[in-house]
Amino acid sequence: MTQIEGTFNRLANPSRYIALAGLVLPWLAGATILLFLAGLYLAFFVAPEDYQQGHTVKIMFIHVPFAWIAMMGYMVIAVASIGSLVWRHPMADVAAKTAAPIGACFTFLALVTGSLWGKPMWGTYWVWDARLTSVLLLLFLYLGLMALWQAIDEPSRAGRAAAILALVGSVNIPVIKFSVDWWNTLHQPTSVMRVDGPAIHPSILIPLLVMATAFTCLFFVLHFTAMRTEILRRRVQVLRLTQVDAAGRRTGAHT
Amino acid sequence: MSFLPSLGQHAGFIWAAYGVATLVLGALIWWIHFDARRQRQLLADLEAMGIRRRSARNAASKSATGGKAQSP
Image (cartoon, rainbow over all chains, first blue to last red; front, side, top):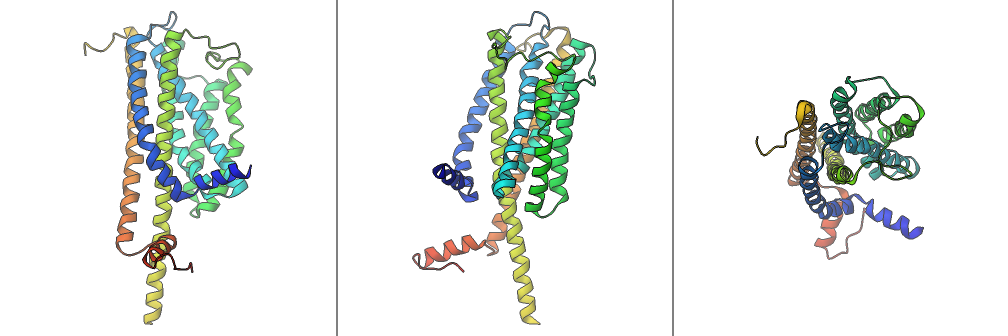
């Protein structure tokens, strides 16, 4: 346990993190591009039409990954929030803060692409059912976290307040996941992550999984980059305070 | 356009979904890249003015004195 904590602490050192991100990011970005090329080729030139939905099934190749990553992004924030509240580690704050705008974009895209899929299939862009409403609530949670970070200047105070909100809001994640089982909805039930295995034919499932992996890699490329930038932003703030402090001391010495 | 597959009567919805996704993700990638460049530049400018973090100053003085410098 101590060894795991030691490894975690070493990785959570901001300077070590920046060095490690510099090594990992080019490879992860390269893998992301290759996965997108493969996924888009499979989605548009290999995957057949669905027997019920026709060509609109192609929207699934982006809509489902957006929805998965919208939830995954929030789980990243929830886990980081535990790190922030329990260990008071600034890197946990950095991870939580930087995941919010990325998760918000993926949630927004899940809602928009879902609407654009819903209109030809259900005959409507929107219904106030449990799945759609709980995902909209997720978007508001992301926006609320971003607003909270902006509203409080002192990073550690902002981190604690945002961590509490994030953990309270995490109750929405199982609601999103199980909403199609608990309530009547136009939304189709779970068809990939099922106890009895996926209900989708491999010719459509494989492009979906490749696209989901590509979007997951993209999420982490953006998140790791944004975390590195946030560390630099905090260093800039410290240096500016040092600059103001030094200028104040010089002025005091002259008077 | 001939290399693109025919997407039937709902092609507009499919292209709109992929178009919005490209626009939003493109904007997100640009913003994160721009923000990273801006913060790197700000940090470089401050360091060029001789303003350094305490740990960076300690490391610099340590290497200058052959590792004999003490932390304040």
